[in-house]
Length: 369
Image 1 (cartoon, one colour):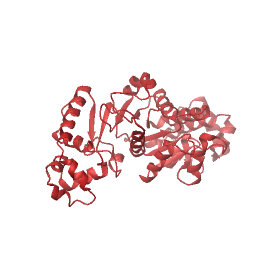
Image 2: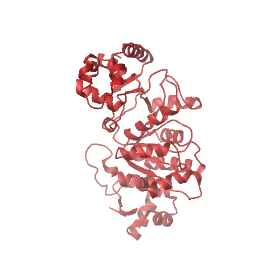
Image 3: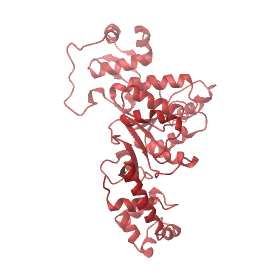
Image 4: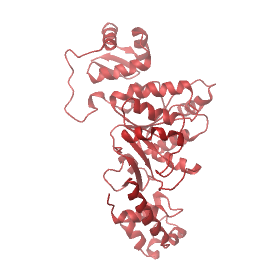
């Protein structure tokens, strides 16, 4: 793959220690391009608000361009794709984050501009209940074909990726290091599946190893690339809460799964809900309703018309019959009447919505159309 000359200068800017993405974008906007930044006189650079003298001094060091040229050779040899923030295939949501990355390295054929994309995060010590919720939640969302983003870590992250793979959904793993390694190494066995159904992204150079601060930097991409962030389980402190805070700062929707106050890995979620920093999440239907995900509009095509005699499976027929006799019903009430677990009922209702048979109402109510 051939890359533009501008990419070398973007890489060089990225290599300047102490130069954040926000200031780098400010420099590019003022000078006209990344290349122009390195060709602008120091006296002119000093006139740009927010650019510190030590940054200007570092920009004069030719080592940054040499390092960028070496990195570009490594990228070309590795077969990675590079997407810069001015490219048309750069994620729209991430492009509008003030501290969004200058560029992303991509391994795989991931569609970074997928229409429906959510990030799922949580503790690395995921409980059995948390794992079951995560799997059932993604299974119930599957008819809406969302892309599932996470960080490939132990616990909630890998559970979300694997659940997405099980449902045939695209999944994107956002890494805290260069894409020539996998951390944790135990998850290397999933690499091929992820590559075949999405891929890996990062803004770290090849050769960069995972470090503590890298995970915090990685979290801004997880928070910014998606329409919403879902926190499955979290203790009172942890990276998931940081990701939730970043998502709130980006005006993203945040959802948290509640739990008992005595449960260590529910305290963080309960705290988010109590502080009104997250919506309470009990089912996939909650998220679909809050985000306005209309099943009839999941494809940009001709409107879906309600079928006069839709093909319903036995479970859907049971739900149809119950709603026919009971009228509007709460999700829990409907589940009890039909003797169907709530997680399975949520998936069934989404399928029925796509067939034009039922519609959701505020307050977790459902009725026939």
